[in-house]
Every structure is written in structure tokens, then in C-alpha cells.
Image (cartoon, rainbow, N blue to C red; front, top):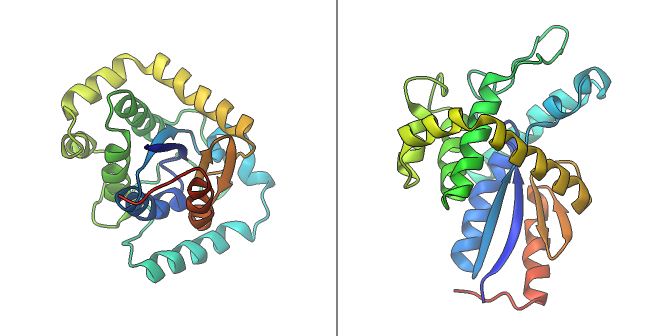
Length: 216
């Protein structure tokens, strides 16, 4: 029997991106399936977040994510442009967020169309691997959707036309995330139990084994 778990993912989270190869490997080895649930980054969800956070946190995040990527052989560089619009001097996050909302809506729609993990895997790699400049231009996201088995042009068109409904889905994911017991990403939830962070995937596998998880 295939076991499913929720995977709360933000396209601006380096840790979410860095978790993708391990989750892909999990699903290849075990009879398990990730249910992708797209959420907005915490900087967008919580106004003034970067004004309140400890100033040591951003530089530590940079060092930590670089180390994780190098240890696991994952290509990594902060996306260009940054998925959120933010003043680098004041750290103020703009109210209008065209980049992150566009890719998040595409992700939510890809989930609805049954190719959520494939689109997220392809698009996040394109954005975070350092292999692509200006990830938001020249049909690059549509090409990711094509590679994931979707009609990229159609996905772009429909996501733009149905933005309000997709935003409601994303906000619903955020509510479910909080109700599951955590606010951060990547968050995995199995049988109502939350596992926060890419370093908790082994714990997730252990718990699923208690419920009959089988190798393929």
C-alpha cells in the first residue's frame, strides 16, 4: 500500500530545494508519495520578519546551506533574481511580490494537475542550481512545466487567469501547515505528525516504516 505524506514547500526556501533529491530518492526506494503543498515564504507571510529576526541568522543560513549542498553534491546558488522583492539595505519586503507568487501559483496548479512534485523538482533546480540566470524570463518556467509532463504555456495562462483561486489554495496550505504543528519549510507531515527540516527525512522514513512502509 502506498503511503502518502504532505510536503510543505516554498520556492524561496533553500532548505526546501536541498530536500528535493532526498525526497526523490525516498519515493524511488519506498512505496511512498509526496503530496506537494505550496506555501509562501515566511518573509512574505509575516510582515516585518527580517526586521525582527536575529541578524546572525541570514549569514548563518548562507554558510549552512552552502555546506549542505557541498556535502551532498547538489548544485546551489541563490536565485537570480531573488524570488522575493526586498530592499537589501533595510530588509523591507515589498507588498507586491510578482516573482514568488507567479511560481507558487504555477506550483499549486501543477499539483492540481497531478504533476506537482515533478514541476517543483524541475523548477526549483532551474532556480537554485546556479545554471540559469533570470529564471523568470524567456519561458523558462513554462519549459520546466513541459519537462514535468505538463503543457507549460497552458499552465502559465491558466495560473494567471485563476490567480485568486490559487492564492486561496496556497493560503489554505499555510493554515494546514500551522495546524499540523509547525510554521517552517521544508515540513513533512505523515499521519498528523510533523517533521521539520531536511535533516528529519530519516525520522519521517522511520515513522512510515512503523505504519508498514515497504521498499519497492
